[in-house]
Image (cartoon, rainbow, N blue to C red):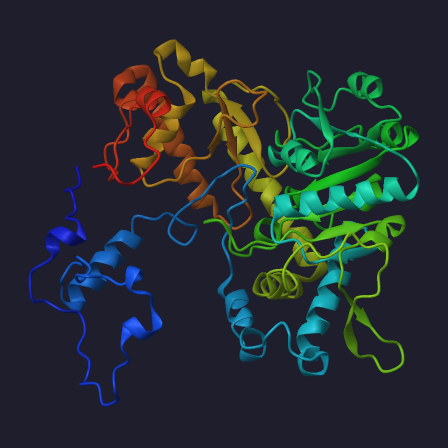
Length: 486
């Protein structure tokens, strides 16, 4: 067991200091003249006193407690935590990109505008859409933006459509985004094979159907074999098809949402295009649309003048839903995505998807003998297993996830999607080697063997982490909602 680390306040010794400043050679301002007296301290803050090296070592040690793709395998199904090429980081830090201001005159940022314009075209070509906005700051923000476009489209036709259909294998943000956009949601069940139940969909559509939000491949890791029939059912009812592109890592260069019949698509650049992900951002959720929805895109739109080829902000869009993000999206993330696409090219992006699918199917095939398999057969870039076969030993999926921590692995997504009992959702991505996959697989097999041989060993894990197993019942019934207690 690792020894407990002292708090920085416990390391403090009176008189120690982490800095040394020269004597001030200009008159010091009186804080009371600029700050109201009620806001001024009457005594110095009780900060710890340490040397510089102690401070650096303390925070460096804390940083090592964080887990990320740079220091380990991160098989989060649905979240697509894959390695971020450092070349893309370098591109985003080029002075011409990093040191500009969003309110500079257009003439002084032509390079940045050209990048945005080209990225829009690239994403439109990749998804089979006719136009793309780069404004949305994240996947769920892209979902909401796409739904607002759908709402504006129906309203422009004088139609009041109030319901959005959401399969039970969709991403969890879909119903939340639909609700935030002012729609009611209706869940469509999956059939025995994990596909959208066509009979249930047919019964659900009607004159009040605004859209169907579909993740394809779904969160079960399965490609909808009946996608043409699904599109026909929704369009015949007057609704639109919305594509949740969070799982685009499985289809790049192979198929396109636009060719499947979708009218709107959002992409998660922080998943598919390997830009930074986690910690609340930054992210990017561009939205692509078919021609009939172009008038409603958020403004401004990056345009290019025919007469001189210059790039500009197009604000003259009377039917636009308006601005959805300050400035114009998370520009640094867009630069990284542009570098990613240009580095790979069309054939490279296709290869990315092929490798992601190959890795997932290799892991699935090796792990299937040790878990219950709700949907056997070939998967796409991710797959789901169930730990319900371990319940005979008193072991649950959560216990497996906790035990993985002792071996230095971040657990896969668990208990999602909700329609799979004791769900384990694994996504290896294309960036991992066979050796990395085998190491994780072997550890999972070992944990299953431990569950059969010594269930308590698994049920009381983890043992090697700073924070051990928590009392989940107490945490749920008596949550600590502030940081003022001991």
